[in-house]
Image 1 (cartoon, protein in one colour):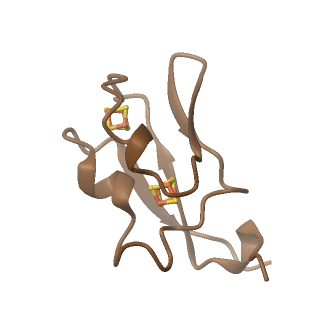
Image 2: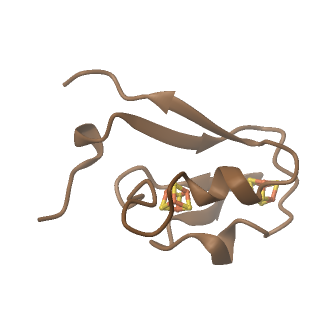
Length: 76
Ligand code: SF4
Ligand code: SF4
């Protein structure tokens, strides 16, 4: 069963400090990081929070300037 965005305890997003270095894009197991506007964004609907792939969000691990932010998901 695929989890919907609201079933995860947190979400990740990319803030305006992103320099479009491309490092996170190939490291995402669900291809959820795409260019949108001035910099890359994460699709919260397809992001699987790296479950079953990594112990923590891989985009956060690989970003050299800490542009990927983890936030709690509000209760539905
Ligand atoms: S948390 Fe994992 S699945 Fe979600 S965008 Fe980051 S690398 Fe991709
Ligand atoms: S690794 Fe960080 S700076 Fe590079 S594209 Fe991804 S979010 Fe932006």
